[in-house]
Length: 280
Image (cartoon, rainbow, N blue to C red; front, side, top):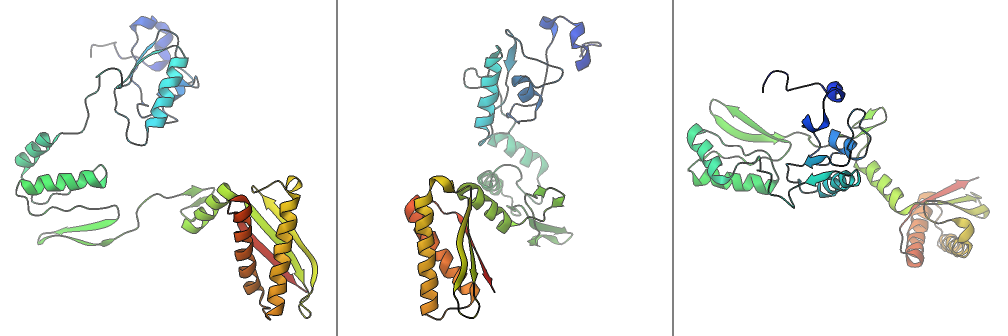
């Protein structure tokens, strides 16, 4: 590259627009990438104007199609001419073909082969190719598997924890699968709370049942359903009284089962049900 051809982004205003080419990140539609911010007119230093030509030299990674298409649509809205893979053959994959991989294997003659990068199916195909070339020590590893290599050989010796780590507030990795499952449940179906106060000696209901919902139904517009739910609760309490079931946890389990069936039958939804029983 000749001296003076590469300039800083802050110097863009000093040159004619038709003399400027930008090479930028964002070919996979990453939300915070420079191209995504240009496309949505949120970039602090670079804007797209009608007549600009944007060349996306990339093949969308499976799963990223939605993000890539969103960026392309936003670029068109800004008035740009967008050249991308679907309309022009402009991109050569950065991944080697089989013959190129064979060449690398034949040149390096590895003692051990460990396919890396890509999905599991890609690792399997790479391993088969290595074995077809006569290699004996081929290891297909998944995230977390430990391969120990010593002067005597190589072998898989165990597993370590690997994968995504959730950062939630000040906590790093302290939110487990159970908590995430509950959050998804709450987000999808909402919350249904039953509050009861029971006399510990007579088993009479002193107050309630009161029902509180969040993200499930709007109580003021669903009074018939709430009244039916209360009848279900009272029937459960009568059943427990008749069958001498006095343990609060046992009553809660029966309440949850009956309410879950009732609410699903009426709404085809499964809210998280939390019975709160106070004994006095």
